[in-house]
Image (cartoon, rainbow, N blue to C red; front, side, top):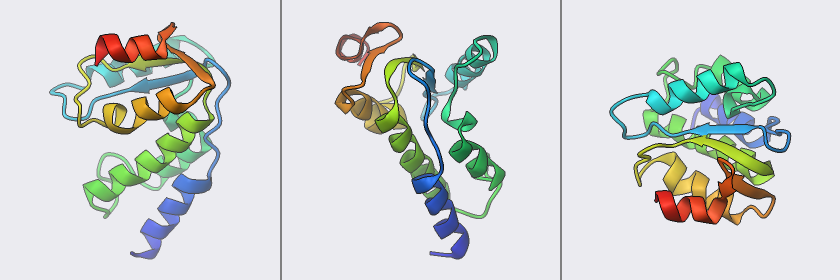
Length: 142
């Protein structure tokens, strides 16, 4: 691995990803034909002060500054995805309360279904997704 990847991994593993209770917003666009969930999530955050996504944490900001989105660096797509998964898992392990999730039609291969949802279900401090019991939400939607 090169120095850039090692530095990016250190950012994903160590930079602050903390959020206040009930303030975290997620979206899923992996393997979907449109970016509608992402658009809705950003519009929601914009109109709801205090709500945040990984992108708004010191970790997410640093990762974007490093070019770890939209192919702005020389890493392979799977390397970039892994870095974001590392940061996202840490984010969800520390989250609490309600998670607001824009995950309509989330593909079973998506980051949300493959890693984020299981992490949410395992975190005792997260109680609900979109105001619904997290286990019921998972059962009804996936």
